[in-house]
Each structure stands twice: as structure tokens, then as C-alpha cells.
Length: 473
Ligand code: NAD
Picture 1 (cartoon, rainbow, N blue to C red):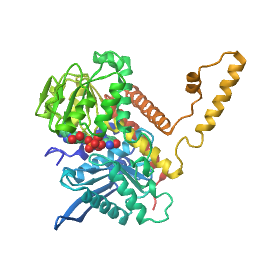
Picture 2: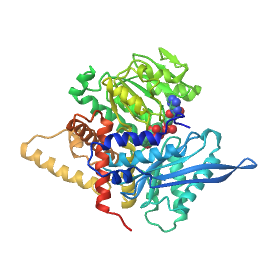
Picture 3: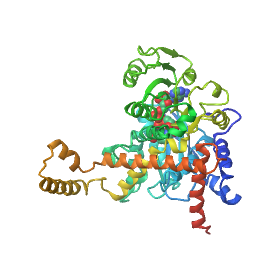
Picture 4: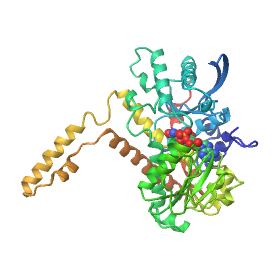
């Protein structure tokens, strides 16, 4: 179990929901409908392993159908369980609502330790999982669209796309059945790093508000902010990379085998290279301290803590030792309700998971749109815009008698690439959503934190959809 013995991750999500729902005006029945997981599909299938057969446990949960398709990643982990997949599916519903991505929430889980299987076995498992989803109508560009999550990436998404495509010959939009695909297989530029980029933007927006930083005793802006990141996977690595680009200093890194710390900063890529060579983060020459007990790394001095591994990392048992003033939840569910409560009471800010890591689903939405339109963003208008800009620049040059250098001209004239359009859409989404959540918080003094505010906004949006739809049959 990834949840502690007496707690349930889904109940944690529901308790956040219940707390927020008092600040909305919806009937108990409608709130129940929003909160419930609509469809929970639990299945088992065999694969060949060596000379024998092994049975694999798997799930796909569609939490809410107020919008179609439903959307959410597939987690490959030997810790995954039904409660966790339900919680993650619910978070997806609220996440999509917060960033105005028109999907219902879903999530998948395959209970395996990926390190125990060969490449061919992983492919078998992924393809069989997809076949099971096809059989039950739990996948399709208009039905339910999976994506990567912990333990899965572009490779697995390719296998899913190919399996679905093979089983649905002639379906024009088949490639929109899954997102997070490689570029060469109808993916989109910028998806791989989208979640981390989004987390970094979320943190930047948070620390930009001078009033909020003042109450934390911090100066506004990211420059020089000391950050500890837990998890050097897709999300953690990219978050750290973009935070460094924005001026922050990574002082601590935590992986499952241990943690390292240096108050003067760690060289991110050198740490990654060291881990690749030696198989561990420990023993890195640029670290001033290291901790064999990885959790100790979270408790070191910093301004911002970014849990980017798994849920239930910051609990009632360690919250008093967390020294950060801001927790940016890059992972889903890293902070328990009790720990979150204690942290907020002592004045800290939590940037909640359902907003903080929404960059991934935002760019997945762009990928899905690209798949449905069958044309890359920018392909039709890049050259047109360049020509229009060139005409304008030439006219101004003629009228003023001033000629631009070719560098200046190139900068002004250039039409946008797909990557630039994706990053622009992502940044706009993260910036707008942060301030929308903060405004909801500021609008009612009883809403004490950003998570409650984010839930209030999400509940209101999902409620409007359900009310508009009515109930039929
Ligand atoms: P990943 O598999 O790429 O990386 C996770 C990393 O965390 C691995 O390097 C792993 O070794 C490390 N880790 C595991 N347990 C740890 C522990 N106890 N202490 C320290 N490190 C530990 O996964 P990811 O895609 O980066 O996902 C991480 C989190 O972000 C998950 O909660 C996931 O649900 C969430 N998320 C991911 C995406 C996405 O686009 N990939 C989008 C939204 C949310």
C-alpha cells in the first residue's frame, strides 16, 4: 500500500473536497455525484514470464463523465492499488477543471515493478492492458485517453497507440487515443518536459506576489530562492532544470536511495550523470551532506520544497521538521491533510498538486487537438505570419529611413514554431490559473489556503457542467 495503514488516499481527496464544498452553494446530491468515481474497472490478465505464466493486476478508473473524453495517466508501480487509482482519477477531474481543459478525470494502474521485467515483457503487459481497455470500451479518442504517469513514458504510450490503432483499422482519429507519444508517432513538441515546466511557472507565479512573500519573510522573485526537489524523474528533473533557468538554486535532491544537500547549490546535470554512472545519488562529490535515509533530505534548510516522486511523503510525523516555507506539490498527493493543515497554520503556502502539476495534462490536451486536426500547430500560419511581419517591417523602414540589422529583423519577423506555441499556451494556462485560484482564496477570508480555493473553483465548474447536462435516462 502506498497509503499508510489507517488512511486512504481517496478519502484524503474526499476530505479536501468536503472541506471546500462548504464554500459552494450546491445540493448534497450534486456534490455526491461530483465526488463519486463513476466507473472503476479492475482486471487481471496473464503474461508469459520465463517458462511460466504470471497474473498481472490492473485498473482503469473514470472518475467523472461531465466532459468527454476522460483523461489521466497510467501508473506502473508495484505499490499501485485501487484506492490510489481512484484518488488520482478524482484529482484529474479537479485538475482539468482548474486549468480549463475540457476532459473528465481518469487514471490507470498496472501493479508491477518495472525493473523486474524485460523490455519484451513490458511491451506484452502494456499491449495486453490496452486490449483489455479496448474490450471494455475504456479507451478511445472520444472515450478515455491515457497518458504517462509514474513508471511510464513515451515508449509505453507508443505501444498503446499502436495496439489501439491495430485493433481499430480505418479509425481516422485513432492516434488521439493516448497522449505523451513520441514526436515521430504523432506526439507534440514540449510534452515531455511540460509538467516540470508548468511546476516551475507555478512556483514563479507564487513567489512573484510581493504581499504573500512578505508574510513568509521572503523577497519576491525566484532569483536566489533555495529549493529541494524530491524525485529525479520526468517531473522532478524538469522542474529543477527550469527553476535553475529562472534563477533559483537547487540546494537538495532526494531519490529513493538517499538524499544530497549543498547550501551553495548542486549541479543538476552533474548529479544526473553521477547517478547514471554509479546507480546512486549518494557519493556525489559536489554534495556537502548526504543522507542514506532519503526522507531526511526533505527536512533540510530551504525556501521551497518540491515533492516530485509519490504521494504521502509529507505527513503528520515529519511536518514539524520541514523547514521550507513553500511546498510545491509536483507529485500527486504528497502532503496528507493533517500535515497540510499544520503547515498552513504555521503560515506556509502549499501550491496544490491539482494545479501545480497540471502542465502535463494541458499539453496533452494540445497533443490531442493536434491528433484530431491532423496538422502540427504553426504549420499553416508560420510562413504567412513571417511574410506579413516582413511587409510591415519593410514599410516602417521605408517610412522612417531607418534600417534594422538582420538580427533585429529576424527577431521581429519570425513566425512561431510548434514548441513556441505549446509553451505559450502552457504558460498562459499556468499563470492565469494561479491568479484565478489566489483570487478565489482572497475573496473569502474563511478560505484559508490555495488547495481549498482550487477545489472551490473546480467544484463550481464541474457542477455547472452536470447541471447543464441534466440526468438522462
Ligand atoms: P518518474 O517515474 O519519471 O519519476 C519518479 C522519480 O521518483 C523516480 O526517479 C523515482 O526513483 C523517484 N522516487 C520514487 N520513490 C521515491 C522516494 N521515496 N524518495 C525519493 N525519490 C523517489 O515519474 P514522474 O512522471 O516524474 O511522476 C512523479 C509524480 O508526478 C507522480 O506523483 C505523478 O503522478 C506526478 N505527475 C506526473 C506527470 C507526468 O507528466 N509525468 C503529470 C502530472 C503529475
